[in-house]
Length: 264
Image (cartoon, rainbow, N blue to C red; front, side, top):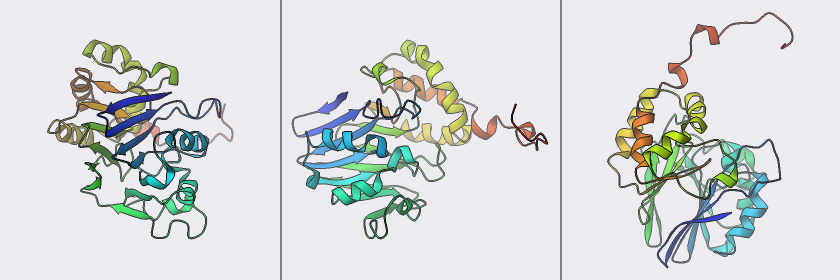
């Protein structure tokens, strides 16, 4: 399904939520995002080989491949950028990814395919011009990757938040946003386990919340599951700000050598 997040006639933000459907029942659901600004385009977290063909076809309904200027990758995982070799082969785009991962992601590519095509984002982030907007790469380190960025579209006021705010749901449940505080808490069971394991610590969650509260975020759109608008956004910020997660929950019991040979 293609979900139109924003459209003022010149600037369009689209979300694709089920392009990997049927390709693998074991692969995690993932959203991909296309921004088209006055005839120039960027894909955010375009995913891996499972979605490549379908995403390319959907993208070309809105933007010729030659007008795709950027790929933005929040981090280095295969569900984020596993099809990098195909994108670099089929388009003339430039990849922006954390400088920490800029020498790792070429391993997704054939020899020399990535040469000169990858821009490393410094830890403090940066702004990237796209016609009548600026896409801001904002720091989200350790949420969950060591070098991690989210992307904020200054025109639409959408924060593409990567794994932050993700929910583990089926694609058919994503047609409408979470918009109220009550609805957020009703959906919390789809988010809680994921954030407790994949976010590194409460400390970095609090730093991130402090930053986002200073921004004008009209829509918070994660890479997995449903997106948030209205009162659901401050409800999520209040919850994640106080969440004990990652290393906060680990003890010595998680680091024990088990002598048995086989898992029971």
